[in-house]
Structures are given as structure tokens and as C-alpha cells.
Length: 223
Image (cartoon, rainbow, N blue to C red):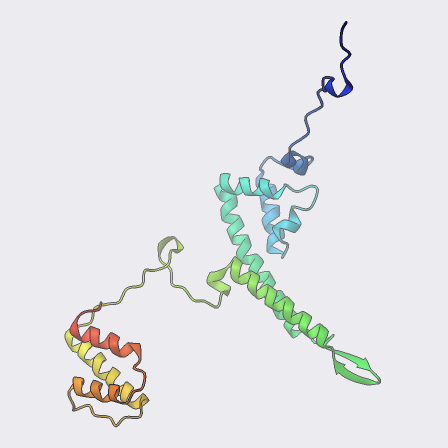
């Protein structure tokens, strides 16, 4: 007597393969690179649009597609970098406009004009956000931190230039003079250096690290 196959043991019917997420995201979108489309992307970025907003349009490529184009096409990469800088310029101008606009800074209440602090704080937040974004996009131009760079935009290595003996002695003497002044001690440039240092230590005041640095330099220990 043959056993009846239970329903859950029945062979599962093969189903159509579901498209990958990337395929779903790019269905109907351009995937083939063209200089005209690359130029359009850069032009829209120059006019202040973000890449996220541009790629949200149904007739534009997905962001991952743009990323692949940037890796594959050097001319597009060069144009894109220039567009990023001009994009930051657009937003910097926008921040200036927001700062200059006082049209909504006051509201009328009970017949009197009073500051609308909510609008003022909102404008400040917008400007701060723009400052942060432009500094990240083009740090060399908009960041508060100044960094010297060499070839290929690599930071220059920090290196002290060795001083000649006479220069070392002068730096050491100048440091002692300044320390005596800062610590309220009488200037005593004619006294030996070791005597001047003992006088400073005898005060019990903290000795700045630069004094020890100058002492090392005078002995030739530090470079």
C-alpha cells in the first residue's frame, strides 16, 4: 500500500528569480555613460543641487552608477571635482544671502515688533550647516584649519631646521629673558644661564616646557 504524500512534503514549485536590489533601483534609469549626461550632472551640481537630489530623478542614473562612471572615466572625474568646488561656492554664496536676509527677523505682537528668535536660530543653524558642508567638500578653501600641502595634495612633513651654534645661543638667551619677565623676576642677562635657571626653579612656579626644549637645543640634544 503506497503512502500518500503529505502536503508539506510536496515538491516546491520553482518561482521566478527576483531581481537584485541594484536592478530594482536602476530599472528604467540610464546605465551607459555618455559625456552629455556626465556634463548635465556636473552642471546641476554647480547650480547647488546635491548628487543625492539629482539621482532621485527617474531619468537620471543611480548614485552607484555615477560612482562606477567616476572610477572608469577620467574626464568625468576631473569635471566632477571641479563641480564639487563650484557647488561649495554656490552654497557659500547662499549662506551669505541667509545671513544678510533680515526680512523675517521680527514679528508683530500686541502692536509691537519683537525679535523672532526661532527664525534667527533657524537661520543660524542653516548657515552653520552650510559652513560644515563646504569645509568637508573643499577643506583647502573653506576649512578653518590651514594645512600646507606638497605634491599630490599630501601634507608636508613637519621638520625643524637645525640652527647654527650662535643662533642656538641666541634662542636660549631670548627664552630666559622672556621667562624672567613672565615669572616677575628681575632681568639678569649678564648672569650665567645655570644661575638664572636655578633662580627660576627656586620660585616654585611651574617652568614652561619650552625652557627645557631650549636647554636641550643649547646642548645639541634636540633637533
